[in-house]
Length: 172
Image (cartoon, rainbow, N blue to C red; front, side, top):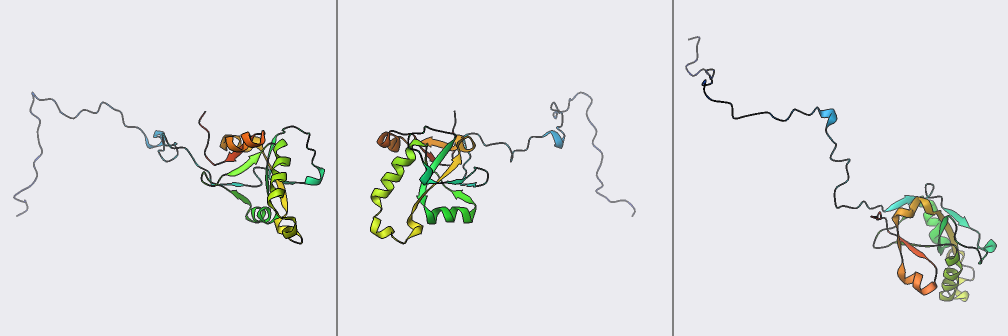
């Protein structure tokens, strides 16, 4: 009983038939195959939700040395409170989203923004509260230029270009 009764037999091809299976495509070596997880998905725009303050060159601006007549420069500016700026600096990032964008303006828009902010704030309430004092910081425009969208409402109201930092890259 050395043999099994149902041993597999080798199949033989019939001489007149061609094989149905043809390998027309050569096998692609694994090192030449594209990585599908690296390539951007078609139709999906990448979204950023924060930026490192060191990368964008965030710096505080001394408002006492501000000259209203100067034109636009290579920076965009944001007016906020002392407490908000301290939070940003402690965290090390600026957080934003398409639903809560960061508003930025060119240099001529800062004085208008500060004047508007001072009208809203009560001077009696600000006495002794340095956390509520308005401060201005700037970021390098060329670093975030592709992530900006124009803010037509504020631009029309103030006559100076305002932008929204949404995190969506522009599709030119």
